[in-house]
Each structure stands twice: as structure tokens, then as C-alpha cells.
Length: 460
Image 1 (cartoon, rainbow, N blue to C red):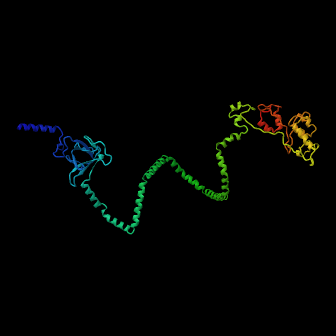
Image 2 (cartoon, rainbow, N blue to C red):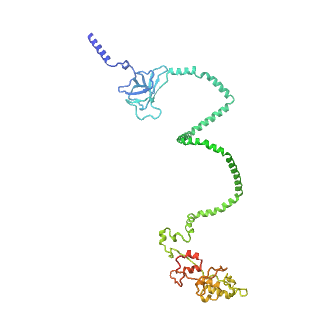
Image 3 (cartoon, helix red, strand yellow):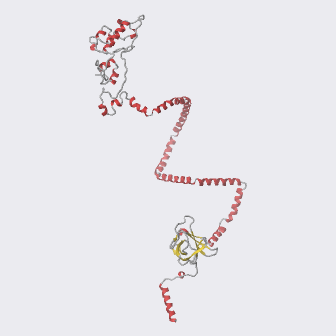
């Protein structure tokens, strides 16, 4: 037996010398009952104080497990907990080191988070991070802070502060109450407009960033600003003079406006219906200029482009409908009263001007009208030269007209001179051309400029 004990001691010594051994690793008696199949959870604490293995783990002050191990992981403590497998906590539970009483033992308190608990349950092998752990202050820390407050703090000055406040507010309680009420209203309005204030601060921040990006331009402007100010200072007298003149101009303008106020209002009132009717025309007024500014040569006649213009033939009908009512016989001149003094045929001057037709005697008026209505050699022979020359402007009269026709410019009579009705060089549908009229004859009978503009290519 003695030899057997010696062998056992040798074996234990060999085992202890061949591996690391710690007394703290040895299982301790006691501790909470965690059942046959407990779950293990690791918790990270920044400071475990004097927490020891076999300490209790509680949920809502109900024991649900125990501390089995405490290890140092860098600068934090890794505490291993064994919990009953029926503990109902989310996997983002919070852990806190608390005391049972003022001088009682430490224990780990587990609880679900106040906000947003996880739908997943806490299970075997889960970890509670250091951000979800905390500890209560120690009694020594509380007493030390109280000692600091009482000995080196401002407690001794509290009486002085209270006395001075009483002196300052004595008799002014209503004013102080009003200030506090206004301060409460002000802070309330600040709270209501918190979003707008934040938006203003953010806008100011964006403005500051934009100004920072434009920093070189701002610096350049600030560098040029002194020179601009010096230039303005040098022109100060001229600027003052200009402003005074501008003031006088303003006074004059005010007088003019006041004097013309009634006339201006009347003019605008009268202009209103004109502008209203002009606005009612819409696009028609603007489109009318296509015809008005180019009449009678509108786009539909001369063509809207060179190709269309080349395909048009002067003298053709281009979708044109005209209703023309002309009386080329001239006005009927009333016969003069034989009792009145009249001008006989022999007194008509040869070189003009032609006397007014209503002043001619009856025989002279009939002879002149016969020559002008039907200008022939027989009807015009023997009449004054001015009458013959007038007839020659219409039809050449051989032997009577100088150079075969045309007697030069004629004086304008005071009454229209009757001209014969002459057929044009083109007839309407179903008509019959009785006499060919040339462009020269038309120009001789009518205004040559108007004939050249309106009838190019019509007369042959």
C-alpha cells in the first residue's frame, strides 16, 4: 500500500509538471442550477470590477445561470456564462454588472434592449458585444465624487449664489417670470422650427462650400476692391453732381407725369378698344402683310420660289377672278345755257390750256367731244391744235398729228377729257376681239405707269 501511494504521487507530480495548471481553473462547488443541457454565452465587458466565477446571472432579478470563466481579451474582459436553455431573450440582449445590495456580491443582469429587439432568440455560442454591456458605479466611486463635491466643489458657494439671486429677484418676480415665459415660448418656437433651422444651416453649409470653391475669384475681387474704391473716391464730386442732376430730373419728370396724367389715362382708355380689336384679329393681321406689302404682286401671282415663278406665264389666268365695271366714255358734261357767255370754237387757243369744257359754247363742245370720242381725220380736221394734239395721244391721225402721232405733253384740263372706249388685246370666254390694242396705245390712253405695272404682256 505504501508503494502504491508513492506511485500515485509520482504520477500526479509528472502530470502537474507536464502541463499548465491554475487553481482558478478548478471547478468550484455551489453556483446556480443550470440544468442538464445549459447553453454557453460569451459577454464582453470593459471592466468586470470584482466579478468572480460562480457569480449569479439574473433576468428580471430571477436567477437563470452562472459565470463559469473570466478571461482577459486585450483590454476587455471576456466573461463566459452558462444559462438554462429555457431562457427567452433576443440575441441582441444587453448585459450589466450590478450588486445585490450596497455591500453585496456582484452579478450579471441580462435584459432585452429597450428599442428594436431582435426576432431571433439568444442561443448557445452567441456573443454579446461590448457596445451592449455596462456596469453600475461602485460605492467607492460614488463616495469619492461626493467627497470631491463637498470638499473641493462649489457647495460652499451655493449659499452665496442663493443670497445673490434673492437680492436680484426681490421685487422683480413678475419680470423674472415674464422672462422665463418668453424664454419658454422662444425655445418652443425653436423646437417647432427645428427642421427649418436645420435646412438653413445645411443651406449655409452649401453656400460656404460654394464660396470656398470660388475662393480664388473672391480673393481677386477683394484685391481689386481697394482700387475700385479709390476710383470711386476720385470721382466723388462727379457722382454727387450726377445724383443732384438726377434728383432734378426726377422732380421735372414727376411734374410732367402729374401734368399729363389725365391725358395719358385718356389716351390709354381710347387705345384700349383699338388694341382689343387688334388682338382679336389674331394671326390674320400678321398674315395680311403677305399681300398688303406686295400688292398686286402677291406670292400666289409671282410664285413663292424661283421654280414656281419660272412656270408662270405672264398674261395667263392664275386662279384670278375679277369683276370689273368701267365707264370709259367720260362724264357727261351738261350743255351750257345759251343765255350765258360761252367760248366759241375759234377762241380756243392753239397752245392751251384747254378751257373748262362747261365754258364752251354748244357748237364748240359738240365738235370737241366728237373728235375726242371718235378720233378720225374727218372728225378732227379744222379744230384747234390743242384738240388735235389731245386726239393724237390716243390714235395717230395721218396729216394732222405731228411726226405721225403724239404731240408732246398736254396741259391738264380742269374737267376729265372724255376718251374713247377701246377694246383690250384679250377677250373673255365667248367674246370677240373687234380691234387690236397695242401697249403703246394703252399707255397713250391711260396712265403709262399703271398700264406698265398691271398689264405686262396683256396688250399685244
